[in-house]
Amino acid sequence: MGQMRLNAGAYSDIRLRILNLDTRTDLKGELAMKFYNSIGPNPRVVKMFMKEKGIEIPFEEVDLMAAENRREPYLAKNPGGQLPALELDDGMVLAEITAICEYLEEKYPAKPLIGTNAEERAETRMWTRRVDLGICEPLANGFRFSAGLPLFKDRMLCRPEAADGLKAMAQNKLSWLDKLMAGKEFLADKRMTLADILLFGFLDFGAAVGQPIDPANKNVLAWFERMKARPSAAATA
Image (spheres, rainbow, N blue to C red):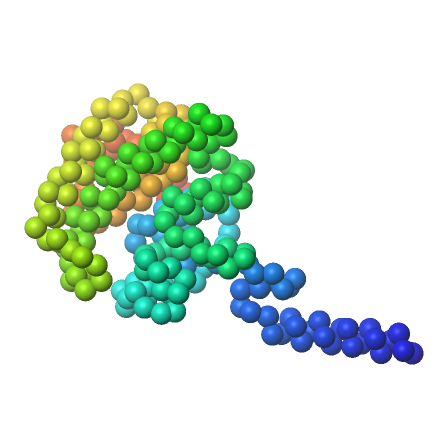
């Protein structure tokens, strides 16, 4: 009889702990990953990366238009105020899309999108760096400092006088890339990688905010259509 009372008490204790779990815990009482999501090309890049790898992580929506990312409680998670962010099992928060994707690649190596050896990983990081600095950043800031100025002027330092030059820089780098894409399926030739996802996410965004791909860049346009046809692109549009 004493043993039965002990079991009942243990069951009651377990039930109470489950009912009082933090919303980010699983049934073991362990913290689970959470993806802080919003509109925009940055979250889309990570979401497309996850779709390609078959990773499913719970989302928490953050209202970018209402500037929820620029005030508490989000700033306690990511002091930079950018989106997206990934909260890990232990409560650590990662920001910056390349860092998040690198982490997910290491945690879930199946269907590699960065590489399976040192050479492949280095090649992917090289292209990711090139498109991020040469195309994605100037394209995004060209938008923030012009059409997006009403939204961003009170959230970050904006330089409207630089907008046209930034847009031109992105287009110039795309023309440079177009020549290198001749005969290639993806940036890393036959391998579709994080670099392709990053570039696609921003070029698709650019087309919607007055920065379309120059029709003269036929190799880039053909690559873009191949990326757009992927199920991950449609699922994150």
